[in-house]
Image (cartoon, rainbow, N blue to C red; front, side, top):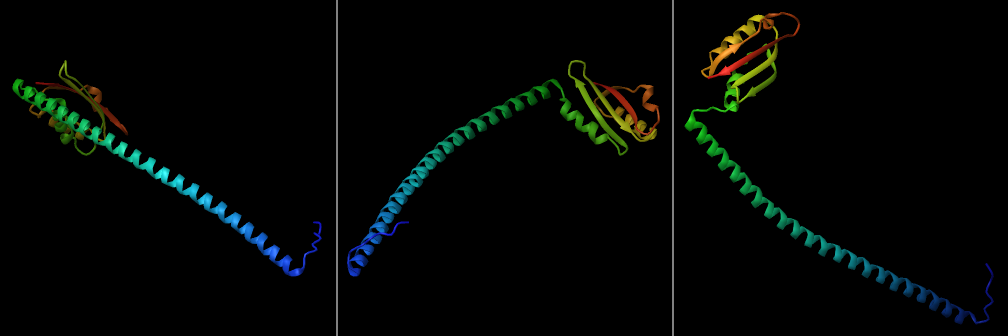
Length: 173
């Protein structure tokens, strides 16, 4: 860097140096204040926008809650009407009957599939058993359920092995 030739007396040089430093500090201070002002504007704007979005989402959620609540009430009403209709005609839904089947399932039986048909009133149960006595007892328990009209069990249900499989076809009354 080139040395500057300064012909000013030392006191004037010192005064000039102070003025230059103060001028630079003043410039930095004004720049810092301007940046802080811009930062404050950005933060305030972001807060205002976020508050507006929060109010909008609260409004949307409030509307959805009323819609969901009314939809839930409509579904509940329809289910109640179906339940009354089923009672009037003496019909029992499969969901109620499946509870009986599941409660009757003993240890040693693992159900792998349950399918039903409302048209033919037939329930098919497939599973795995550990010993023949368990599957025979399960069959007898199912036959004793009040809604069972007929239970068909193929002879293959009595085959033995590590994981023997069974199939029951139940017709309901």
